[in-house]
Amino acid sequence: MNSIFEPLKKAGLTTLKLRYDMRTDRCTLFAAKEWTEDLDFSRYNVDFFTESLLTPDSVFLPDAAVRKLFAGCGLSDYLEKVEHLLRAGRHFGMDCYYYQKYDIRFMGNLHSRKLGIHNKYHATLAGGIRRHDLSDEELDVIVDGLNLSRAMSYKNIAANLPFGGSKTTVHMAPLDMSNMDVMGFLAFAIDRIRTMTGPDMNFPTEMADIMNEHFSQQFTNGPSSPLGESGKPTAYGVYLAMKEASRFVWGTDDLSGRSVAVQGLGAVGRYMADYLLKEPVKLIITDIDESRVKQYIVDHPDRDIQYIPPDDILTAPVDIICPCAMGGILDEQTISRLKCKMVFGAANNQLKAINPQEEIALSKILAEKGILYQESWWHNIAGVLSGAEAYIHGAEASLDRLYKTIEDTVPQKTRENLEKAKALGITPTECMYRTCDRILYGE
Ligand code: NAD
Image (cartoon, rainbow, N blue to C red):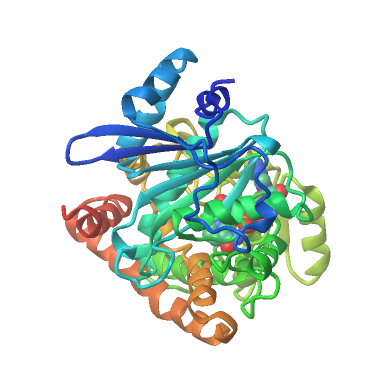
């Protein structure tokens, strides 16, 4: 399998940094050996710190030498693909750390620090940390991480938060939380990239509590957080925004009688369904885990809730499709088969695209079909709001303040965006990018 970690492995290195410079349109590489193979990371922040130099045999390689290493491994074309992704998404870079002892491939996907540079915290970036199995194709993992980090820059603008956008993806075997060597390594790497993070896909939330206790305060949203899980506030924000979008399309935010199909009944989707049931909607639900659907129907005996097979949800003749599972579900083909009036959900990166231009092109196809669509990073912001509330206020974090912020922020931003897009004659997705690019890039 092609891997940017292969040259590190061969040369006994620990570190690879990729940087994209927008001024010159050039990518520059840097690689290093910064610690010895037998370093015990369980001693992180006890015997050594994130800035320590941890080997007498340190190596620091400039761009040309790193490119030579890639060429020696037959990976120049692969490297070019990764650099193309950085360029296309205007990311400032990736920080990669290789922990050979456990074959852990840590990738800090860094989009923009712009919003966080004067925030006075250790972390100037915010974005979750997720794990991918080693059997997953590395390029897919990189695309996932870069897309999500880009969405985080924009999401943090939507949430009025003083943090840039990042996403950490770790290509490794399932996490053993009792292995403090591995936990220490992950904390060390997170501290280095200066991101505030929370466990996402394939990392348990308990990980954050262990990190906070032993290694790093940059982790949030563990079970001991006074704010609880982030899925519920996220669903609340999406529900409020959906009502605004409904007012925009149908002239009323009353969802009574509307048919809404929720895809995925996980941490967000099950609460989304709960909020929708506060009104007499026609609720349709699906999940690849059928037991979740069955349980949901059993838990709501007085309501008429329909099940739809997972493969049929996108072609369902409903008013609203509410994606709350995976991203990448909308491409030209699937859009052509949609029969709804609105796609409005929590899932990140619903459009199958790798940059804003591709997203805007797909959003135009949706608009031509008369389907209202707003990129989810504009309204699924309560997860990062919750993380920031916990990060900034610690034990004083307040659920009341979090919900008030959601109510004050999310519906208003959606209303403004939809109205502005209409006035400019562009799609809501293009309008969001125009608003944010002015802040991120001065355009
Ligand atoms: P989750 O893993 O808890 O739930 C996802 C659910 O979708 C699971 O029940 C899974 O079985 C189901 N699913 C997977 N593939 C499916 C398919 N093809 N058809 C139907 N169901 C399918 O994840 P989550 O935390 O609820 O997140 C859902 C989405 O919302 C993700 O895209 C996530 O990035 C996004 N999001 C989550 C949060 C949060 O706070 N959890 C915040 C913002 C955005």
